[in-house]
Length: 582
Image 1: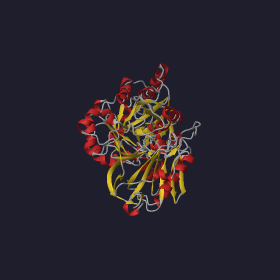
Image 2 (image 1 turned 45 degrees about the horizontal axis):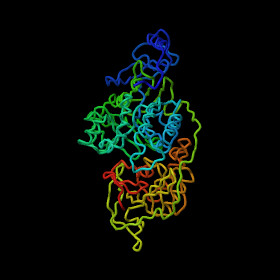
Image 3 (image 1 turned 180 degrees about the vertical axis):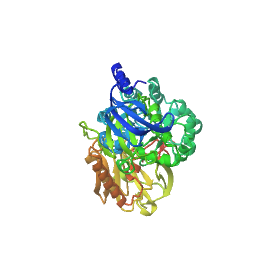
Image 4 (image 1 turned 90 degrees about the vertical axis):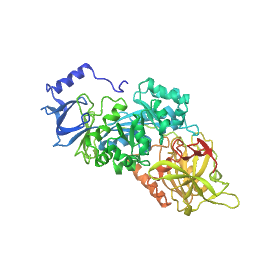
């Protein structure tokens, strides 16, 4: 695979050699540190010399440079790489995300623009690429493989095999993103196979997304050349995937947190090649918990040797995605470096990107600029009224989407609910822990609304939560106690152009507007965090006690994750691949 960056000229290489030999000074010298060697998994004292944004020397030599930084034994790591992230899920523009995560040592992100592609297609991908240019961290992309995720969803755009093939040609596109349609892979769907083949033809990796898949089905899935998976939630499953040579991308996001489950396996070196990923993580978690630096600390505290942990957060994902220019502190590698106080806390002291210091002791010192953004309205509802949210039932025992803590997998539960004796209409009863869930088509103003029931939100008083972030088609998703509050959520989201909203007694009590495709805020990360706290607190006031209520809400529509979901066409049984009657 060709590198997405220009290659150095002969004259540039000549200068690097002269600097390494001490015949002329370098640009930056990190003096007196301890280098974490990700090749031999050892740590040892060495100076690091940088010229033209690249590491040109590592060793005990007395080099000279225009700028010298004494380190007094601090550890020098390669820049950290998030192997799978949805930028949109942070709710931030890439420039604001850089300000937030670069001080934590993240210098490269592999982004799947699946979310904005479901709203605006290739145009949305190109917008994110433009917004992520010339920042003090590198954002690469993978081509969304499932827009829509399955035939039962109604996105704003569709990427067929021909469109995916074009996206794979984009300069910063490194592979095919999570192949969620594993039933299509197992069934030999020709359109699915054409997308996979397009990546193989270009020598690009294909990432997986097959929760719970084991046995012969997993073998068949891997046989299609799928080489990674972040959607792993069981020990037996993750070992089976590792044994087949799949790169396990250990995920720790906001709504799905799998690291604790797999820590014993990482400490025992049982998974072969693995890496870290945040997948869907929100701005508040990034501010409170940090980024990959925090995950490294947890991996090492569980018993994994520090050099090995660092290798799997840098060199391993770099090699998986063909980024041969980064992932190590070594001559001939890009000078993306993190200097930490020690390899137990992994607290960043200095972050270097392309040979320039961009963060120091938690303070961002890089340069960012945000190009102009088109705030085109993307929430278009048809003619809907309260009747669209009324659920008429034929029996007292009904199928219900059962939430699971810290997991985006749901259960298909059967619950006894309260109904109107005359009409069979569902009625809210806080003692039964069941609420209404609705998915409203928002791209083409069809007026189509799917309604079902969900347990686990914990509503105690009349109200509703609404969001235009609704994986994966990103229609509107609303959960609440009654039709009036549900409709008020939908109308507020239409008026604002999208966002997160809480309604109580028919009135909006808190809102976080998301002006870019109904997915991303145009504001700075501190303001976005404050508004996210406000809507979360408003949700708590209704009784919702799930850790990330809007993150949990956003996954109710994800029709490729077992077991039961809500789409704009109704309740969807993922395992049976069919709409079911409430």
